[in-house]
Every structure is written in structure tokens, then in C-alpha cells.
Image 1 (cartoon, helix red, strand yellow):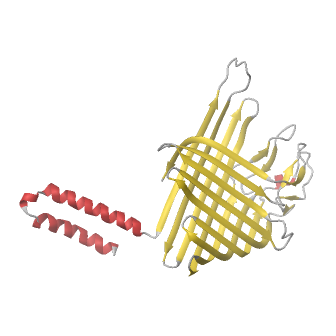
Image 2 (cartoon, one colour):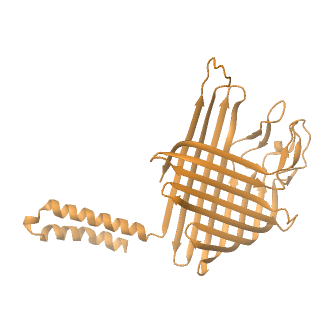
Image 3 (cartoon, one colour):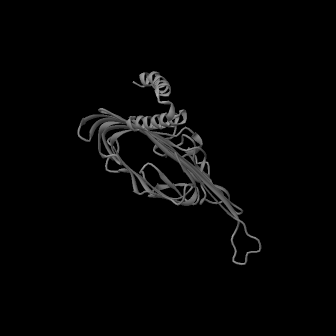
Length: 321
């Protein structure tokens, strides 16, 4: 249809130009033709099964002090973020994709450079409609980080606790998806494989050089932890107002093979308020509880699992596309 439209359009334009009365004028015909094309292009965009959109932003802060009686120290910080959605919906087919990238650093005179944010997240879900709002679905998600991560609370020096692909998480599952509205999706997967990767052996030794039995659930001498269980994933992407949006992703996982009662919880919330065309305020909350992720004691030895919370609040440049 598009090829036919492309072939016929020049003929229609030429016909309109040569057959129009002389008093109408070429400029009027030209104006009319341009408007018609724009209208058809807009209609074609509306009829497209693809919907896409993303956000990219940078938050910067800097503090400089000289002879400041109240005390303090200079610092420089930045936080970069990129989120993108690419979705397809036509007939009985539904395909949703999301990419999230983030990286942040803070530099102070006393502590030097410290990483404050680091994320790579990719998710894809395909669904085939079975009935109203219900889909038979297959999904995949992958997450890791860009750079080395450290625990800065250990003494006398920081302790390396993570790297690219250490850990990394890959999940693949089958289930059913419920999508009653465009802004909410819930997928339950009674059959999901989850792999945890730790590809750096250096993480299996503490600061004293003692061997650690397991890191992120991966046993010493291994590269991966295999899990098989059930998963519930609920995503919400809702415009509260024209200038305020909330995105929430709650992921609950139970491993059939080991301690199924210990639910792995991951909950991400992003609240965005558009202040001007290029300026926005963002509040990001990340909450995790994973029985396989151990905490770090102040002496650099391994502790037990704990509830994890990260909060990032910033105002910076942001562009939507």
C-alpha cells in the first residue's frame, strides 16, 4: 500500500498542478499539496503498529570552598541516564522492549572518586493474545553494570565487590501476561530460568586474602548459579499529569530448587517532573532483597544478606524523543 501511495502521489500532484484554473496560482496548489502530504504522514504514523520513545538526561553538581568558616570540602558529581521503549502491537501480537542505562560519579577532596550509579538493563517480552487483555508470553531480561564497584565503608581501604558481568543476571521464562491498559503490564511466569554470573575470580577473596565460599550465590570455582522457579513482574508507566510521569517495576522471584520461601525482591521506581522543555527533576528509588547477596563488614569480611536501598534525587538537563 505504501509503495502504491508513493507511486501515485507524484502523479496526483502533477495532475493537480496542470489541471487547476490559472487564477488559483501555483503557490496555492503547492501549499495545498504540502498540507495534504503532512496530514497523510501523520495518519500513517498513527496507524503504525510501533510505538517508541525515550529519555536522556545529565545531572551535574559542583561545590568549591575557600576559607569557608562553616567547614566542608569541594566536590564534583555527575549522573547520566538513558531510557528507551520500543513496543509493537498488531492483531494478536504484542512485543515490548525496554533499555535502561545509567552511570554516576562523585569526586570529593578527601574520598576521591566514588561511583554512585551504574546500571545496564535490557528486557523483552513477546505475547500472543488468547483473550481480552490476556497473552501467552515469553520474556527475557538481562542486567549488569559498566564498571568496578567498591564498598567504601571498609577499613583501611575500599573493597572491590562487583565488576562488569560480576554479577550479571539473565532470566528467560514462559507464562501469561495481563495488559488491561496501555500503561500497565503484569506477567506471571511459573517456569523461569535465572542465571547469575560472576566471571571474575578476584571477588572470591576478602581483603585478608581468605577464600570466600560463594559470591552472589555462585560457589567458588564456578562461573554461574542456575535457578529455576516462578516470577511475577509488574510494570507501570503512567503520566500523572502532562509534566509528571511515574515508572515502577516490581519483580518477585521464587527459586523452586533452593529455599523457595526466600523471595527475591527487586523494585525500581522513577518519578520524573518536567520543569521546562530541557529541565527536569528525577527521583529514583531502587530496592533489593536477595538472600544470595551478602553484605560486607567494615573489616572487609563477608556478612549476611540485608535489605538494599538506593535513592537518587537530581535536577538536570533532560530530553525526550
